[in-house]
Image (cartoon, rainbow, N blue to C red):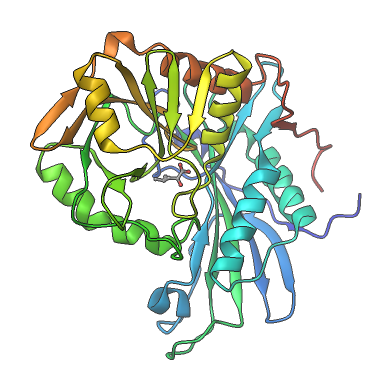
Amino acid sequence: MHSTITVKQTTHSRIGELDFSNIPFGKVFSDHMFVADYDGVQWKNFEIRPLERIPLHPATMAWHYGQAIFEGMKAGISDEGVPLLYRPQDHLHRLNASARRMCMPEFPEDIFIEALEQLVYLDKAWIPQEAESALYIRPVMMATDEFVGVRSSDTFKMMIMCLPSGPYYNKPIGLLVEEHFVRAAEGGVGEAKAAGNYGASLYPAKIAKEKGYDQVMWMDAKEFKYIQEVGTMNIFFVLDDLVLTPNLSGTILKGITRDSIITLLKDEGYRVEERPVSMEEIEKAYDSGKLKEVFGSGTAAVVAQVAKIGYNGRDLVLDLNTNKVSTHMKHLINQIRKGRITDKHQWISPIKLPALV
Ligand code: COI
């Protein structure tokens, strides 16, 4: 295959500095990055090169008006040493949906897949093998026109970096139902993985932390009645033999881990309902002893158990000993990502590249 991507390999790998038994999330980067530029007409300058800082003008539009989107995806490595990408096309489709909403250019699928394959193959020594670890892959697209005025940028930059990662949360988390601030309203950008959605979540999350919780649980913007998602994840509730998760209403992120979990649960015969879920329903289920588990799902977090939910001036405290569904789902996803169990939904793309030029 003729490659459109120029590859410049590092002469000084930093892999020797990595302690695989203790990898903090988000701070450790592999040796290489992928970079491409959009010139107003087309994507070009496809390059994999040693990870480095990029010089940018202070008027770079992404910083001023928030025209920036990203993805979070993962790669594992099989016991035979083959790097495995998890649902790369689905991530690209979501990235391009975010791009359309934010008036940004879509990225071509063939180059995205080739870039991922070459980059992850080149940095495969950075893929952790530990049970709950993986290579976290962060594509990010940003507006790069140097202009101070509100309009869409003409030029953009796409970058992909890789971070060996352990678990995002290393203990069950506490959630505070947010009854003042909102994450997204209908017609807004809640479904896009837009940088600003996360920026806007920081102040409510800070208040929640001061009150002793790890994250906020967002409610709908009209009535503060229906649950949307958690700061960093989609959310699931196990009520006896029924698993509930808020439906995709346009205001929540179309989680790829969420979709994987719904599919795996249905495979195993669980009753799963995607529909509006009110906090009133969850509180009632808790009071009647039906609420058995609550867990979040996301690429970074995979599956995160919830220990308590702050609501109506009290804590709904969950019995973590009953966490069976979440433990099982987390195990399945981690195992599929490492190629250790049958991938019956073709979520895994093995990378079998010959030696790079
Ligand atoms: C992800 O799960 O990939 C995300 O983008 C969430 C972020 C909090 C790390």
